[in-house]
Length: 516
Image (cartoon, rainbow, N blue to C red):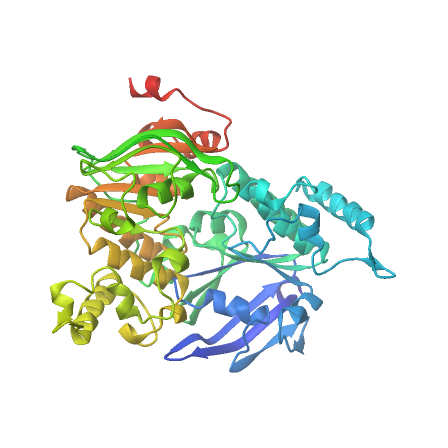
C-alpha cells in the first residue's frame, strides 16, 4: 500500500450535536501511520469534541471511524485503549498521593494469583524511560515532582499500555522552553518508530516545528488539511480565524505612575503541604499604567501568591496594600472594590457552572441600581448587559445569554470571565493565565484589551506560563522559582532561553543589583 494512503485512523463525516450547536459538522480526519498530525482551530471549533469521539467519550450522530481500514465502534475509553489509542489530557489525570510507578500502572496492573507484580512493571517502565529519555523517579510521589515530570508520567502511562496512536491535548502549556524542546524530540522519536500522533495546539510555531500535516477546524467544520512544509504561521492563523491576525502585540512604551498594589515581605502556606510555605518573603509593586508579569513554571508559588493578594488563600507574614489601603486581612468582597480578578481556575473561582451565561456576567454586580427593579433583579436589563458583552468579546454559545455556563467550550467560558472582569473598570486587574486555552484570534483581542486597560492608567498584574505572552505583553517581568522572586527582567533585554533558565532555577539575580 502507498505510504500516503496508509491510514491507521479515519474519522469520516463525523457529526456531533449539542443543544443549539453543531460541535462537529461533517468532519473528516485521516491519520497516517508514523505521522505527527496537528489539529488546529478556534475555541469552540470542535477539536476537543472530535478527539472525545475518537476516545469514546462521545458518540457521534453521523459518521464512522475506520481503524486500519476496517469500521470500528468506540463506545468508551476502554474500547479506545483496546485499539491502542492513548491520550495525554491537558489537565493531567494523576493521583497526587500515589508514587510515579503506581500512577503509571494504575488500571493496567500485572497480577499473578491475585497479587500485584510490581517488579515486572518497574522493569518495563525503566526500560521505556531509558529508551525514550523520559527519566523520572519511580518512587517519588506525584505531588512532589514538577509539572514537566508529571507530563513524562502521563506519556509513560500511554507507552506502558503499548499504545500506538497517541493524542496530545495542548501538551506544552505548562512547560519551559527546554522541556518543550525535549517533548518535541520525543514526539519525533515516536513517529520514527511508526507511532501515529494527533497533536492539539494553539501554538503555531510548535505546529510548524513538529507536525507533518495540519487539519484546521472553524466553527465545527473542517476547513482543510495541508502539509506544514507548504504553509506558514500567518496562513494557518488566517485559515483558523477566517481573517488576517496580528501575531505580535502592538503597544507603545509604558508610562508607569504611582504604585497601585504593594506587596511587602509576603509569605504564604502551600496548598498541598500545609506545614510548608509556598511563598517566601516576596516583595514587589505594580504601578498604574504598566503590565507587570509574574513568570514561572506552574507550581512555584504563583497560585498561592495570587490567593494571598485576592483573599482566596492565607498569608503567614507580610503586608498587602491596594490603592493606599492595607488589605492584608480584608474580606474578599472589600478587596474586590478596587480589583478585577481573572482567576486561574475558571470552573472553581470564575463561574457558577449551573447558572446561565447572563447570570454569570453580573455575579458581583447584581445589587447595582442598573440591575435592580423594586428590590428584584431586573432580568431584561441583565440580559441586555450580557448581550452587549457577548457581542463585544465574541463569546460563542448555543443559546446566547440563556446558555448554561457548563455547556460552553473552555475557551468561551474564559472569554466570558474576561469580559465580565474587564468591564468592571477597577484600578488593579489581576489576570492569571488570561489566554489559557484561547486561539490566536481571541488571544490577539484579549492582549489588545489588556494594553488598552494599561493605557487608561490601570495596573495590570499578569501571571502567565506562556513565554511568548510574557515577552510580548509585559512591561516588566518578575520570575518566581520555588516561592521566591529570582529575577527582575525587561522584555526588550531578555529572551525565551534566558527566561527558561531563571524559571528552572539554573540562574538567579540579586534584585537590588537589577534595580540599580
